Image (cartoon, rainbow, N blue to C red; front, top):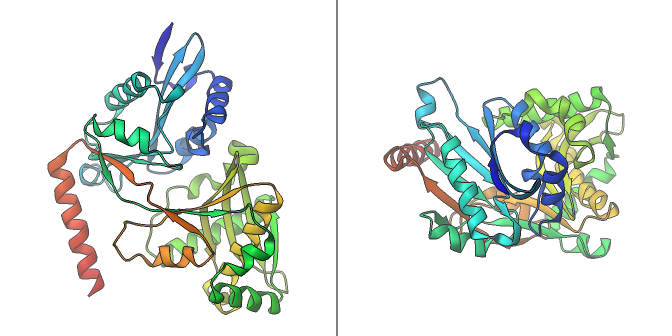
Length: 336
């Protein structure tokens, strides 16, 4: 007997985990562990929908609902992001419909829009969602294949990246995975400093010290050090199935000339390859035809770029239009 469940406590976690891991497009962002990560993060509320048949999960949709500011501000900032989902057995449209129907009922009335951010090429899913009044917009995913020799990976990097790696080596920087609470706090502090410099809010600070307990082998903290042992760069990586995901990173700007960022990224690539991962997901690369400095930086590591796109559903179209207009106007003024 098939049923739809929207309470985390009522879903069999082993069946959920098995379903995601066995699904061709299963990814870490649709796992039970990620629900708990979202639950512990500031300004994020997770929503879960599962389609279950005779006790076995056949469909999963995990979303993170977020809003910034006070209750009034939330009416113009609230949105829901679905990373790597929904997932349905055999990509069955009937299961997808059940997931989306229950999902829409869960969302707060103030939600402006929902956005699906795929991890894999989801063209078939997107074609179906268009018939359900979702809209596709172009957006790049940046990926690096690790199924190459180390020499090939190094030589395909841009000369600037290679030069910076060599500068770091000459400066005596070292790399290691870190696991102690003290080292994790140091990595988190570097991430916090970096996001503060860029005036970018971060919702996960309050739960980073719990990530290893929640995620287990799915999460890894890595860091680089000066020759005298000072940590000057750190990253949090998520690892699942054949893929490693760039999640958060930070560095000490006082040591930029020692090139910790490129050194850390290159060693993260080598570390991932040594562990048997096949793809390094560098995350999003912005919209086609729109200048995006972060995309240019990522591509210099020898990555490939794919327009997997994103799917958008506007729950409050007028508010969405006004919010987008205000956002573009703000950034136009900021750029002057």
